[in-house]
Image (tube, rainbow over all chains, first blue to last red; front, side):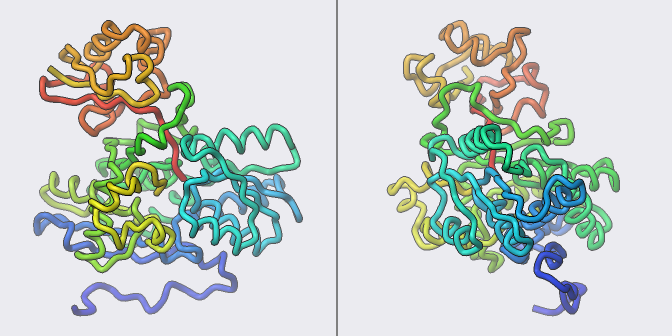
Length: 324
Length: 90
């Protein structure tokens, strides 16, 4: 394996961990390229200080709140999250001296709870069967009941997509002259919206494809469809395609990333890898770029890396786990 | 005949059925076919103006019809329509 690509000496020199967020490596995934003229690249966001893409978003939201005067010393921050945003906020809030309370579904892996406790965050659990929608609803209820909280609210905060518009997408364009397609996982919509805007400015023909989780039936515990939730920052007009990925397919591709690329990624990375491969197969030439949101560490206890698919189906992990 | 997959949240409106055979050449016609078979689904699927309820995602096989041609998206006999509540991540 030769040096081949332009190997930078390091990701930069910084005076603080928070400043070291971003500047993640862009790695070619040769096993995902179905034909010679099409190349697939992934930004490995596990290289961020707390190990996920959400470091970018959390920093942008806190910087924005400080700049606007919305928060000051000692301000308690409240945020709904499925885990990663909470962990990123917990690190940054600890560095900056803001107490943090996160609302998170109770079925998340124990690693997420441990990391939040490690950084000193307080956790309020929401019902597992309501998924992230339940965490959002509970956090909004808490913020309305107590105005002492400041809620960055990643689902409606423009600093979220802006972190990608001014960060992730700029880094991609620094490395690649053309991006035929961008594939992003759909959670809050921040990754997709921010990258889509910048990449479409550079080339309006860049195809923007959303990969979204097909939640297991046991975590679709909504009372009615009116309990559905669409993050306000999402503008569907920016998407060219929106494709769902089952937990089963996401896990299959997460395992393929280990076998084919040596990449130990989280399950949502497997989902975007699946869609990147599909999009790449439909192109004749060009670069397909995706973002791997995190590494696999926080999902080890779920067994997805050590058990077979049959075992994961039999023990209900694929139906009940929350990976996004 | 296309098939509509019913999410758990709608099954009380379909007598517990998880899949319903529907008729129609477009997504809109297929969903109307579902509503004509199970009247309680209509208010959940459609808004007052006949548009798709904001919090309902409908997928033609696995692609969201809102980023295809919406209710006008063509449906083939062998297609599956998957109805899901909009869920967040993050």
